[in-house]
Amino acid sequence: MRVVENTMDVPIERLLERPLFCFLASVDDGLPRVSPLWYLWEDETVWIMADREKTYVSRVEATPEAALAVVEFLPGSGVVRHVGFRGRASVEPFDLDRTNRLLKRYLGPDPETWDDRFLPPWSDRWCFIRFEPETVVARDQSYDVGIA
Image 1: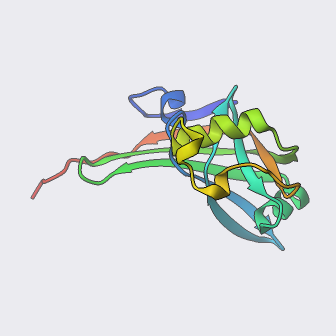
Image 2: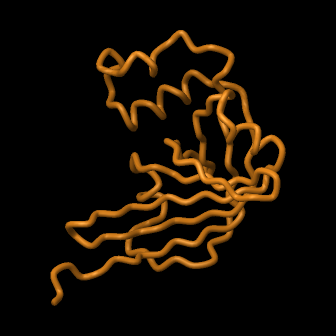
């Protein structure tokens, strides 16, 4: 992964380890589409738990070239950080251990408190999208709050 630009005051990995949304940009019939999704950042790879019945999975299968963004926005403090990637995505088999790591990030450590749709049994419709970043741009676009 080649870092094209980095103006953030925190390591890129620290931002990506947080339970934020990623925005996967893919192409359908020559037109861009964006999907907001939960993700897991491991070993410089973005893993997205995916539902094969959703169109973003077929878009990745048809055109693996994709972009992905993660944004942290804290309006009360003026913090705005953005990490944008370009790379390639692929559809990978479902992985229960990876699923549990991803869901614990967003739902907490105790599966007994999770909504039923995030619990087994898992059907064949579930898989993972693996996004391999080729380039990254990381920008701190924060602003001062309360300036008149």
